[in-house]
Image (cartoon, rainbow, N blue to C red; front, side, top):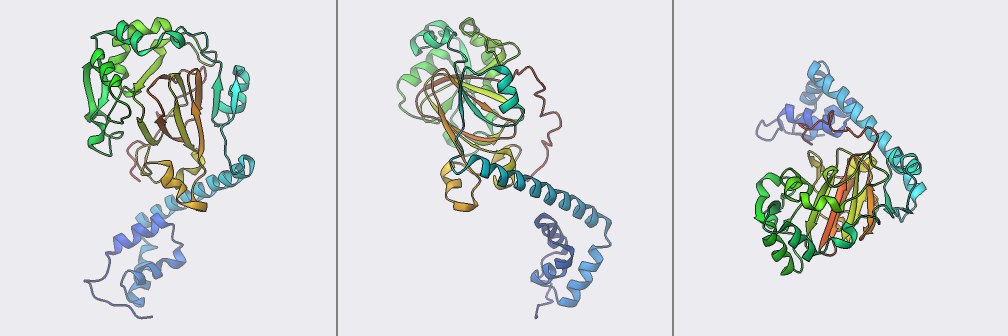
Length: 337
């Protein structure tokens, strides 16, 4: 085998070692990585032997081994669940679920489920029309995510997109907008909107699956047809429900995380389900369902989800389950992928 010794063509040895660790390269193949990076066979053997005596490289190798073991474990879950779920991977629907069944069969098993019959008794289900909300909130200033089309990173840069407008201006814009992803009241705007929208909370009742419920326990969502929340995973278990309009929820299981191109915090580089489907057999399995008025979906912690509004929508989300839901305290938020 012939390789050049020119320093102009050789890749820095630290970069070679770092990439080898990221790729999970076996130690027996380390010298080959150096040869491929432009080192002579003699130099490659020397650098590989030297690396194996370096305590920093060996520590990195141990971390790499643990990561590979984690991927192996998750892939086993992936294979087993594919057999259990079949090719369709349909999210089950349960009408008026018993709380014991919900926690036993879905929450504690980290599985999604579409739920109906949870909020039929809410006054909001009949009252929350655009006219009603506009009359109830009037010119009160609310916070929303605006000018989202100015950049593809609108979800990661949520602070940059905060805007404050009169609610009457927001509803007026909704009336004249057929479809848009440019403006959206989301859970991230909750700090301001909890108080601004307080007159609405008397229309929100309890939910049998939650510790306590009412508007003060939930997060408000409202926007036009066409709003999109791109693929990400939450750091808690969530219950997402619709009061008006429909949303399409596309999910990928937590055990498929290694295949989700997680590049920053809890976000994926995949922008749409179609990109994942285009991978063919190599694609992580997509779970999908639509939720409409009075329907909810349980989003298990760690599950990736992409949400698209099929109509103008009003909804809420909740995290106040009567069991431990703190999965964010120990989350490695400073980790870059």
